[in-house]
Image (cartoon, rainbow, N blue to C red; front, side, top):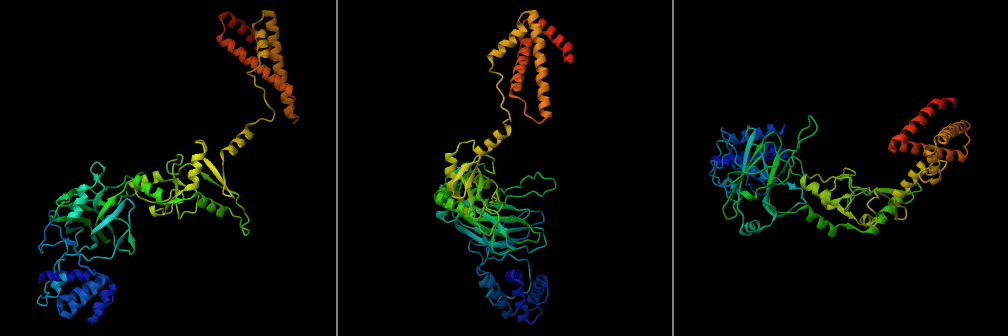
Length: 518
């Protein structure tokens, strides 16, 4: 029977190296070599020996690894590039083929090995996603194995929705136009490694549901020259193309065969938004202020073995993500630092581009480990908007760092000798006005006397600096007096009447003529 030949070949290719070695050694064949050599040797053995003992051994080894029959079908692509929706095999059902019943039929004798129809199922667990809560598993993770030399492979699955599942999808609310809160999603991951797997797309992936192609997220544009663009590998929503009835749904995946192995699964999920995740986090994951103080005291506790004693820890109130003041301070339980980031912006960024990495220490910060800092939340409500940094003390208390910075700034800008405000000297202003706007003879005399005082004050200040002795304070008073006079002179020159400007020009010319004599 041709279908049995295809099934047995598929089983042999799905066995591990240890299983192939056990099969060959039980039949008296060599068990050395790579997996490719072992598979070829086992297939050659099946072509020459079709004994029930050999088939029973293959079935036993296969069931030890894959206890459930698979339902994904691997098909070959036509020469024109279209993905066929039918194959020369019996029509599958939602529960898959009854392959093992065919295998137990002793009348079937494998004589010709042809192309396989199924791919074996692997024990793969996908990482839980915070924005997707799994309600039901429509199809467990099943491995996609390439069985031809072609680069593009097609794998198909047929399943039906129960009436309750269809009602959930039909009655689900909308998160935004066209996107429902209850969805059927398709997830793909690696199969090469063990453990919990993250979503990962194969190359050249295309998903078709009931004769219609689904949207698959594209690549992120890269700003770095020569850098390979990255792709957001998130679940693929296939809900809009499903039959919400008892009609069977057919899903076809086109993927590139470049040496890596992948598994695919279908889930009925409920989709959450960043606001909903924040509400859940605020209800069940808030670290109390007392617990935060204990953490601070533990970090600042004196260690006799340490030569350096820490008396305080500074924490910024600016979010490292958006460079704005923190709204809801948060950090991961596994982080050793006290610095927090804004959880609302963190959830919104991971909703668009999931990385779940702490922006402070670059370590993993999954949603399950996030906690809100209760002490820093109280500090944010008690402090003003202009305070950007605080310091935790050894007793668990805190103080703003702004006051200390202002004291340092004032200390650095305060002069050694206090200066008098020259803008608030009414008697001097009247005196300067008398010098410049009095009679021509008196004003001219006081004009030269004014600049003589300016020159004398400058020389005294210069001699005081050379002798490293502080000059008398009266010299500073003279300097303020003279500078104020210059200010009045310039102001009158720019705003005075035409006759007044002429008199000022005469006095200025006389000054530049006699000033070198001083």
